Amino acid sequence: MGSLKELKEQVWQSNMDLFRNNLVVHTFGNVSGIDRAQNIIAIKPSGIPYPELTADKIVLVDLENRVVDSKYKPSSDTRSHLILYKAFSNISGIVHTHSPYATAWAQANRSIPCLGTTHADHVPGEIPCTAELNDKQIKGDYESETANQIVKKFSNISPDEVQMVLVAGHGPFTWGKSPEQAVYHSLMLEEIAKIGLFTLLINPGVESLKKALIDKHFFRKHGEDSYYGQT
Ligand SMILES: [Zn+2]
Image 1 (cartoon, rainbow, N blue to C red):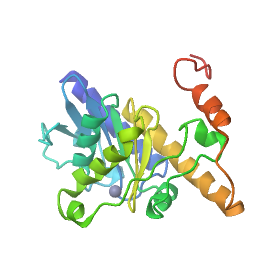
Image 2 (image 1 turned 90 degrees about the horizontal axis):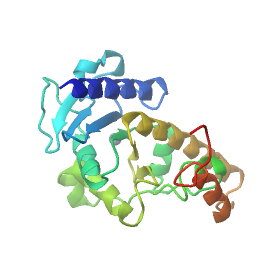
Image 3 (image 1 turned 135 degrees about the vertical axis):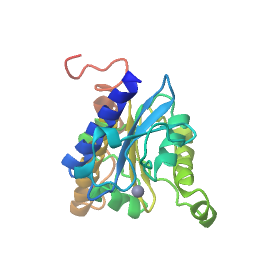
């Protein structure tokens, strides 16, 4: 169980990073991480304010949403996280927030077009917005249907390349190779959403960045031929 203890610590730190970076208020939002060898997920408990959160309050669940070791209930969004871990096999951390700029785009039901290199450094094209849920999905297993809608949106998008999404009328989910990386993507999405909004306010008719420039910025940081940074 040693590594699971570390996973809880890591997920707690990442949840606190969401709070420290002003991506969440009150009890909003959640971060999870998965131990792929044991198929155990560590996630924020439901309804506990961030200042009261400690590593031992982080809840461990299995892939069927059964609590493994806690007296606390896991986040009400846990079923969304489970579906994304099952569908996107390379990811090991997920974040959900209602951070204001990204949520504003989600509420407007608009994907974020790639308008500049800050965006292109992280995503090689638009940041997609899902379709709205229908009444049956909302009345049914709402949290699972929310994730199903994301998976459907990614039927022709690589979740390894585009590691963020807007859920229509709701807010963003991001993911990554670790909980820390998922939090980083949440922070970058909020920044991109903010810059994108201001860009369209200044020039509502602006066009997307040229494909050549998008590819230049994305692929100098990602993939086999990347050369940005020290590694
Ligand atoms: Zn939410």
